[in-house]
Image (tube, rainbow, N blue to C red; front, side, top):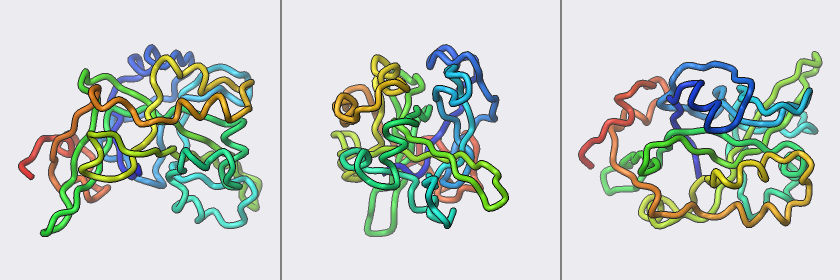
Length: 224
């Protein structure tokens, strides 16, 4: 699964990396948690320009009567998202990329859980496969939310968890964001475990256990 991640890259780098002509600035983040705003790369529903927008993490289906469902929908299984009622419309019409510099996972130990930080070996930002949705409050206010797709763990993640977020290869960004591609079948091969040889992980402090801690010390290497 994916329950915490980081994004501290500059707006200029993100704009170049993801080909976004419109960027909504944000502060560096080292411990992004569910229900918080996250950056997403998407094709604007207004003018079809690729943009980086900020949406709430935890998808609220457009038909839901209770927005609290979003807290349970921070992740969606890639194997079934195209068919699940909560996600199938977004899978066809509202796909996005969720930029990150790394993410966290916890290994169970006899004395508790040890957090690990997972990133790319080359240090470059990357992108999770995401879906986004619009939900209207009773007062007709629009709230935009998102979820991150997950798949089987690769060899880097297997010692920590049996699932990992889907990481989209840069060469597949255009296909994943193509608003005219609505058939799920050509997209499913993109939702695979990312190559292990391109990633690494290391133990970090339990500071990351609290979302109140959100500084560079969260990703500092620590003894397990």
